[in-house]
Length: 195
Image 1 (spheres, rainbow, N blue to C red):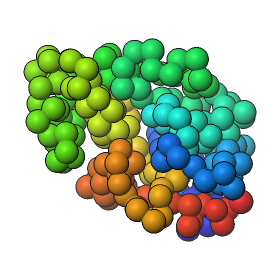
Image 2 (cartoon, one colour; image 1 turned 90 degrees about the vertical axis):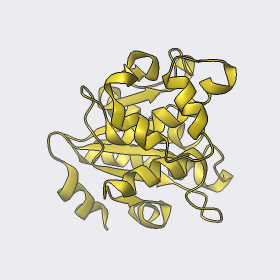
Image 3 (cartoon, rainbow, N blue to C red; image 1 turned 135 degrees about the horizontal axis):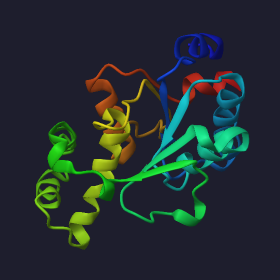
Image 4 (cartoon, helix red, strand yellow; image 1 turned 120 degrees about the vertical axis):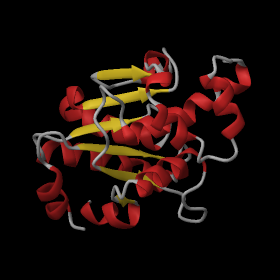
């Protein structure tokens, strides 16, 4: 998909584009990670951008959007205060602010991550000890895609993935949830061409 095709498909009211990926970015890719956020924000007028406020790819993508219009950048965080000092977003929602009992689909889809399945159940039942709090990251990754009763779902995802170990970790979980809903996922093999 070309940049022109992407903008034609998604620059409309209600479109939400995920910008995220791995925390570890190759040194040569760091500047490239700022560019798509900036380019998309400059060349579109109606797209909202969503991130998880993580270090690495999320942070670089977000800097690009914020350099044009931080109000179009929304982040979903795993807990209140998560990386507050480095956030450049215009709007932030924390998993702490979401009543997960009222969002059963978020919980069900978060259980797809088999490594954290038991911990998700504990977290949702109210056990928020140190180990189960890590599960908030998986819940956050799910919400970024599905939205909630008050947060719109994602329309497409632009990812910086580890091409040698693709679709792993939290990034892989987010991509899996996108796939579950047939939400298009573009990794750097596509969007590097836009630069």
